[in-house]
Image (cartoon, rainbow, N blue to C red):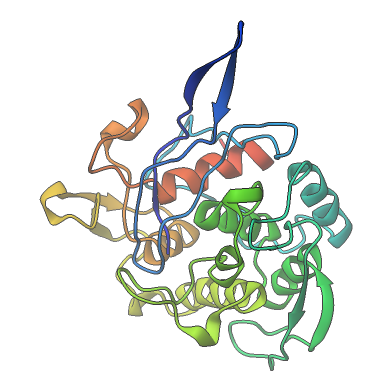
Length: 290
C-alpha cells in the first residue's frame, strides 16, 4: 500500500518571452517512498484549465489512536450510487486523459468479475461490464459492508485517482488503485490488478481485520509499537488504538505519522494514515465524532 507522500509543493518558474514576463505553474510533485502493499502515489496537483482542482487534506484534529470511527468506516449506506457518481463528476471535473490514453476516473468504464458470497463480503458480486467507477465503488461497498467514502478516500490516498489527470494519470493508477497486494519494493500480484479487483480485495481485507482481529499485528485496545517509517532508524511509538477501524488502517498501512508531520514532515514522516484522515475530513467531514 502506498503510504508516504508529503503535502503538495509547487515550483514556479519565470519565462521571458519577447517583452512579456509570465509565470507558469509547474505540476506539484510530492516526495514518496514505497509502502508495505504498494508504491508511491500522487496526492494532488496544481489546478489549471485542464486539470481538476487539487484536494488539500485537512489533518486538523488528527489523533493517531482514533483515525476513523467504526460507525463511519462500516457504514455502507453513507452514499447512494447516484451520490457517488455526482461526487466523482465534481471532483474529477477538468480531467484530461493520460498521455498513454488512460481514461479519467469519472468517465472510464470497468468490468467486475463474479465473486461468491463470503464471510468477509456476504453480498457477493455478479459479473458485469461497462460499469462506471461509481458503479464499482457502490457494488463493492454493498457486498463488503464498507463505507463507499472509505473506498473513495483510499484510492486517492494510494494513487491520487480522484484528481489524476494528463501526465499524472496512467493505466497503473487503476491497476494498483487501492494498493492491495502490492508488496514493499516488489511487484503487485497480477491476480489483483485492476480497478475492481483492487477495491474488492481492499474491502474484503478490511473485513478480515474486523472479523479475525487477533491474527493481525494491531489490535484495538492493545498497546502496540507502530513504526514511523520503513527505515528502522526512524524509530517507533507506542499506540493504543481505540477502535477496530483504526486498527484496520494500521494493519493495511503499518506506519504512523511522526511529530514532524504537523509542520510539513521530514525524512521519517509517513503520510498514509495522516492523509487518509485528512482527505476524508476535507471531502466528507470529520471521520470521528466529538
